[in-house]
Image (cartoon, rainbow, N blue to C red; front, top):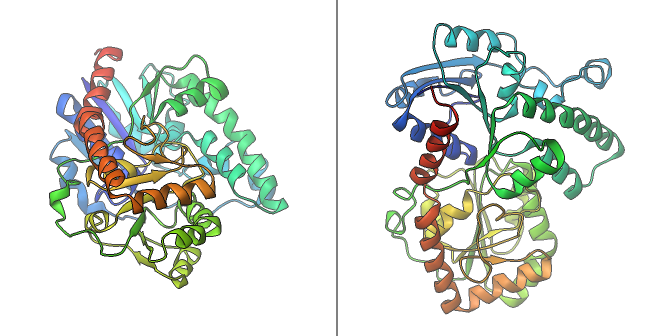
Length: 401
């Protein structure tokens, strides 16, 4: 089967969570099918990575582009039917580049990442089936973000305006798509309840590269003092909000229970609010690091205090694969099918989160059980080759040439 893949970025090096998903699923599809990849390159970045993809794709093309400026509220924004978050990816020449790349080819389907790329196929009703891989369901994400974060009147109006348009746009994508691929059953339920009862949905969770994230790949010993890790892109709104919640009501009660606590915040592009966390006792903000695995191994636990859902969190399977226990909110672990007290600890209030974290830090036997069960879970059902095979088999059954 021949597949046209269109990505809004070049997912290599795999230094962001969404890049992990798109890169590994692409490579899995290319093992079983002929894949042609067209990817956008913001401001010409990563154009030198073509050989990586040429190693397993039949054809590869990168298209440099620049985002348009965010539109003014009136008349540019209010009078445009597209939600602003989608319009930000509407750039002259991209549609033409996709059509030129696909010209003369006989594809069984087009596989695109997220609705920002699906928009270039909405007016094409010529019969090419469209599969949309959702790193998150945009409407679900923005509703959760609005609920979790306070904003002024002007921002609340802008959020409401974008949500009204986004709801319509999500339904338009669902009518055009032959299949939507989502990260977890919560995403599927949201689509069914809020967007479309008719669109076909396949759940393919996020996973982990078990060869790379292996305990022996970073032989550093655990830190001498009880240490918790929070890992991720530190300019990403849900991660910033998670730290705000953690330091707003969890950190101090946890320090009362574990006085020698150390907190590691590891990830690229920390915004000013995240950088300021380093002023707190026992807190280190590293910024970007060349290899996150030593931090997974030195930490006693990973904390995932996320309040904004949509998609699933790669930091959890990575941590479990490295043999590091995890305490998370239910939202943070959604879609992964984890079990409280067996392969993860779950807590959804500040008091519970502090107590569950302290309990594991102070109980080596509990922590060891979480580590062992976590490794068993990722090896059994959260490896990228297995997840990629599931998607590949799904496509082979649904979209026969």
